Length: 196
Image: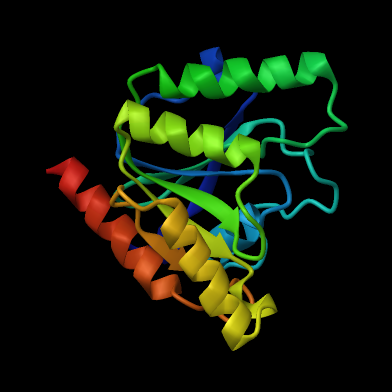
């Protein structure tokens, strides 16, 4: 996987606008303000390919980034209370439309803020992923904001939460680049496995 090949491809505001499903897709999911754009930018070694919004809930489209062997898919952040009911319904149609369109999802990276317990929306998303069989892992962001003791406690709490599943939890820091190579390796392997 050549990270330097990454380029913005398009945004889809409705499920009818999704691009042709012609390459493996790596999907990024998480609540608003969890650090999704920062994670994508760090993975791609770019400062602002994925736009970091100062206002939670502002990304209301699915954004696609094309790479040499796959496509990155940035889903709109969920769980932001100040968005209108109509807008939440549109987001739901868009995301449901994506997941039910038979897309070649090679891996989904579910992003959680390591400092906090998963929200009800996070739990619903993880339940959906477990039920649907999509391959996924959890990137626990903002690990740099915790001291060593807090970090151990939070990681243990997350792993305990997912006892009985084989969900991989990867601590991640966009600031320090912690585990960026681990996530790149997982993405590369998933894309190559799906393409074969």
